[in-house]
Length: 281
Image (cartoon, rainbow, N blue to C red; front, side):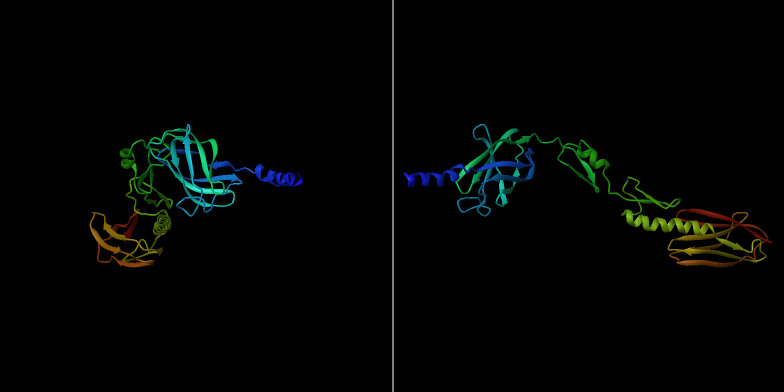
């Protein structure tokens, strides 16, 4: 009698131990979607030689509706003592609704169920967003464009142009901006704005002059600049192109062979014109 009592007392703790699934994260998916899953459980054996998974003797897991109908298997990837990780690919035609999660326990060789724990929803309505010049369906139905054609008609690679008046960059929205990256635009746009301001601060001396005019401006960086001097009847009497010039500009222009009167200095840059009046006495 004592031996029987002792044996019973030893068996009771083992009988009281039960395997159960406690949670699955996330607990929803859409038709046509592939998602990673985390399954947690108590006293579960998520790996062992008695399991027949093709991914290293891991527990299989599956989903079912209404007594095993619409069965859908997941793919286990790794496991710890309390957690099974895997992926689930939901076919586009998989029936929607509530599913039971079933996990194969490797120690008992039995399927453990977590009823009504997973839901499959209908696939999201197709929609598109423009990302880096390409149309992408976010898979959530929340894209800006409801048709691929509309997205393609409006989706262009980002590009930037420079506003030299304030040294700022803006995307014209046409994909034809001068700069392909915002960083490059910022770098050169600030330089361009600085250049234009420096040229506007040019020095002309003497003015009036009897023959020679000295024209100076500082801190010139690489850019194409054209300098013209025109007489009062529109004739060009001096012209010079500065292509890729670096540094200060200091030019002496001799007009002593020209008729006395008023002349116009015109400096043309990519960002506009600067005009000054010269008086030859």
